[in-house]
Image (cartoon, rainbow, N blue to C red; front, side):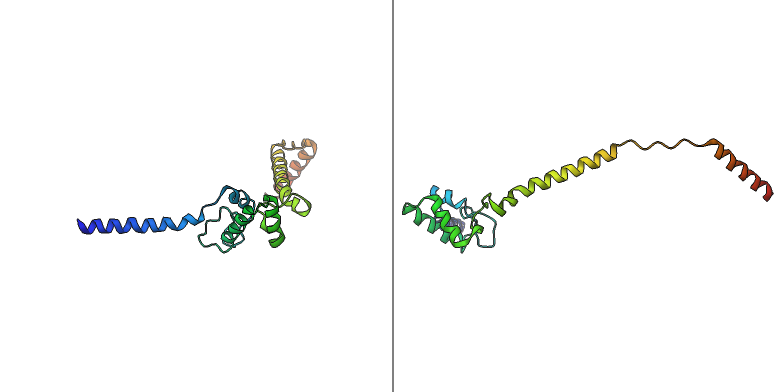
Amino acid sequence: MRLSLNKLLLVVLAAGLCLAQSSSQMLSPAVKRVGDRLACLCGACNNSVATCPMLGCHYSLPARERIAKMEAEGVSDDAIIADFVKREGLRALVAPPAEGFNLLSWVMPFVALALGLGAVILYVRRLRKPAIPNAPVDNTALDRYHEEIEKDLAKLE
């Protein structure tokens, strides 16, 4: 009984230590608000700085600290984001701005969807088109061919 109690205490203590490690990861609302607009550039995930799940991420942890420091200094959200864009380029943003060449990334999915829908509509219309009726048979020409066949068959006998 005593051995089981010691094992249980050891498991609870280990679980408590594991949970204690993540307390430094807590985000303030201001850091989360700005971090949601910035992409994590660690290369291992496709998340924002605020939602990067890696415990020891070499990009999101320093970025969060820098955001918190700039927020404490009273820098506005847009100025913080502009600072990240100045250092990292447009790849620092989760969503590129809808201007210039980046506008294509916003427009092309809808253009591709419209083209695909148009192709499906054309295909369905072509399938539903009635079949071309057969041309009327010229009986005089058909009778002439039948007569020639009968003559040829008679010659074979």
